[in-house]
Image 1 (tube, rainbow, N blue to C red):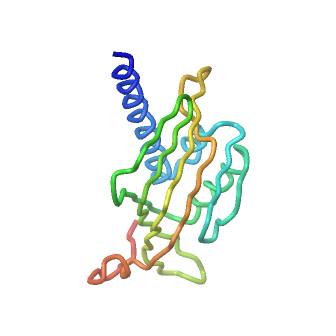
Image 2: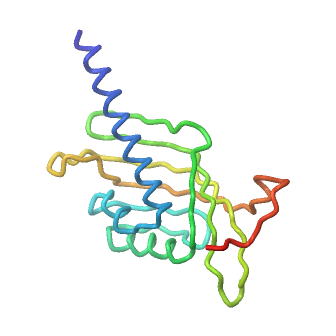
Length: 165
């Protein structure tokens, strides 16, 4: 009987953690740094691998600055999961691993006045701890491993167009 209840609790917690991860990805896509930042523990670390934002960012201030830079690079962002993310829960710790694609539409710049959309293939690994005081799962470490691609590499017959935002 105890094993069944424990299993049910773990499954419930896995669903809660997966919902938190999906909320995180949605908040990234709507480019809301304040919503994204609210998901992190105060001493969290963001390990960004690949692309112009590569680096290790520790603490809310550094992570906020990084997501703000991301927001300022892209006018429009959409995401989807390539396969169902995996979730592991052990006590008050959890891990989510996902293969994601973010389609991003860069802002025009002087050097690139008519940018085309890009695909960011992202291997995402989120580590959560449960904060009993806040009564929520908080990100303590995030690995954001980015492999930028031209959209034609993902959809060979697609002709990129200029985003008319």
